[in-house]
Image 1: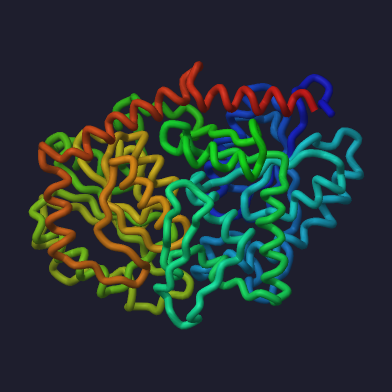
Image 2 (image 1 turned 120 degrees about the vertical axis):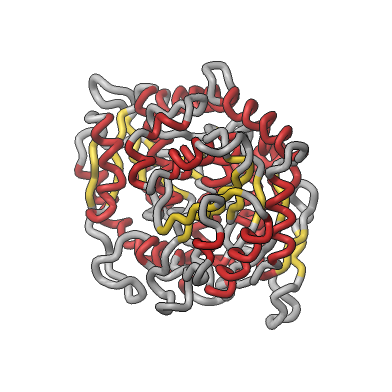
Length: 471
């Protein structure tokens, strides 16, 4: 059903975590540009994340529903960033309580949405869509390779022969290249699943409902994940898988010089100005995303590796948050900054990652391999040193190695890296003849071509909008 004077009316429902919300909002921007009428569902304290998009597109309506109470979520908390790590289960369970208020809202509207686009962690919205006789499109903030594994896990529910063995191998014979992962590297949401547990049964139902949905849209592009995208058509149906990435923020021009960041560089202590005084491809950028926090032992190993490497570097240090014991995490070793003065820069807290990665001086990116960071590195044409820690990151790191733009230097959230290995890898990554850089530039070109007017991702976006408009 279309809204008079606008395109088809779509409800967009993000999952309240930074790495999930931001790409879905960038996707929503593209949908509005293509003429769709959008209502975004958000809880009150997540509205500030949506406000920049609302300012750009005043036509977007908001549906603000109170955040449901949950025994594991403190009152007033509405975003995963304010919870301890591994809190996804609690958030997923809490948000299920929005089913009835949302159903009531739909039935009270004179012109309700004709489709739902909701995050991968909101599988129950498929049941809502079925009740309303409208289609639901899954939005995945993770790549197709990871979703292939997740679908297999929840369909087949493999378990360990030895429940105490974290390294027990789990094989995936039905997906491309038949990978094998140790139990500890599987999604925490799956590893915490206990057959027969009521909450676990609901979460499994969420993921099975994803597979039953009308289709799935990925923040990815065909050249990067072609075989996994094609494989997923077996789960979702032919022409029901759309690769629409890399999704970029409004007004983002990936070919523009880093100076476009303007005041952003000032807010991060002049990091862009610091980079301006370095040679091309000479700096290692070290950052582990918005969630990962290093123990002091890991911090010490990283500092020693950086010091021994002799490279120029920017190290973004996330400060300890909820669930981290004071003084045990994120402490930069005493004297380190003095010993590397002029050669390295430590940023505490937020850093303007996209302008940093796109700066000509940055030659490599030491990353936890979160999907958003992976795509930002690819769009910047920067090869990556991979330290996957949790969630989809092990799959992402493997993909980076397979496509030739990354090499693994450590793995595991609690693993203390070998400083000598780090030092050698970082020094090699900014040397003039590192083969990964050539491949990174090739993949950057493919990524940018995919979002051009006749590119594969642009055509997938157009195809999806056309199908939604015909509902």
